[in-house]
Image (tube, rainbow, N blue to C red; front, side, top):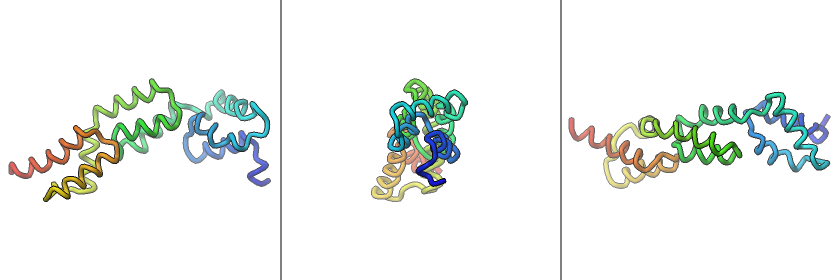
Length: 153
């Protein structure tokens, strides 16, 4: 049986076997394969009713995989792109913001490990952390804070 002959439910299960997917993601990925209107919605309804599609698991999966390396802003973008409930996304991101500086410091430590020696290196370290979605305030404290610690010893 070729991939073209697999049912929409079968295709959805294959995608879900790889990682958690939200209903919106599955809808987006599988809609080109729908042959009759409503067929995909019925398949997704059935998978959701059986617990194969679970938005809370999708949210937890993203947090588990990405939160240690990314700031709250980037994690929020990824969760929103998955079409998850806006209130669930807001709640998850609020929790991340409490640990933003700690997580930013760990990412900084793994990548750089030492304070910037000049303005160019300072800019590079700041840009690196900002592109990973850490807040400007946390980035300033991490990059400046480390340099300050060294000067006081």
